Length: 367
Image (cartoon, rainbow, N blue to C red; front, side):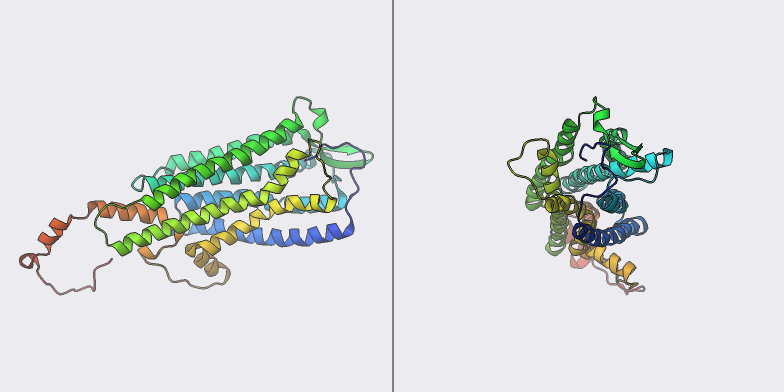
């Protein structure tokens, strides 16, 4: 994202060891992210029991991660031939703008989706009988996420161009040709709006969610074991999603700091090997997310095994669900509890005079 001149843009400044090392890491990252995020999207789209608001938002984030995944070959190309490009026609210019802008668009999509997920968890814990992020509200939320992400891509789309320079075609950002778009202000605004502010907001929302979760008492007369299972799955889901946020913050922190500090006189100079590694720490987040889902969510783990290993996984019972089906369980159980009879009514219904034993023709009643 650095400002560029049209001189010396077609030769790479990186040594062979950097090119090989980063290429191997990037190739592994590409495969893990491509497979993991495609499977996540496939699971949410094809498994009815996984199609709740939280999982739909997770699938939306996976789409954003896939955009950055398909950008990895372009970034590897940049290591070897720097800004050299295959032409300066309309198609070349379109791809040039796309590959440059999609990086910021993917970051914005991820963090805005994490904000939406944090509110979804907060609503599910605080108002278990209300379904807030569903239907039109959920669709509007996802549309808003992509519109905000596109707004941060727009400056890069404008300043990035494919041009002919010194007999070669190049793809680069030409900030000096657009004085109305200040490069420094853009980077600072991007860091504040897509990193600092969202993470602060997410921290506040999850703090409120955690307080409500640990203090929550489900109404009704359901047995204590069932209530404890609901609380346990709610806690697991919240812990998993908080972990996803923490990993996102840690992965992108080095690059965010570098991008802001490079406009100011730093008391030290970052070695080129360290400087080239910093972005890849952030890029690794797109491959880590599916792994986190597998580690923390029994549903995702079972579905991944079923798809990748072609194993038939036994379905779980209603109360033995994994974290990512918690919102449905919590609301359904609370509603059942709310409609269940009071202890006095139960005593009346179960009095000896009211009990009539009849043989079961179709086996035991469902739970």
